[in-house]
Image (tube, rainbow, N blue to C red):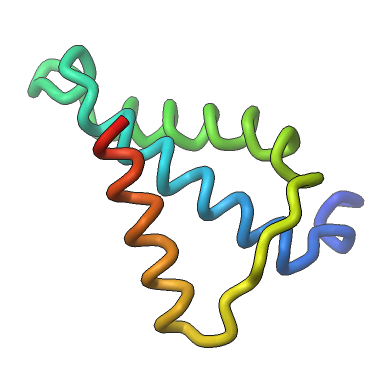
Length: 85
């Protein structure tokens, strides 16, 4: 687990933003949102896609919210954007 100590708060913040947006997209795709696809498959697909996309976004400067409310608002915005996509 040599990668864990090098993970900082900004990278975790970017990962959660990517995960929330990707999850919103995956949960609303008509092919995957039916009852025929188990919830675990959709969660695994969301996590796998977020893990693959996040390293491409680590170089992008992001402004970290100062409060928990700011973080929740940012997550809400990312969810809405994922739903729109």
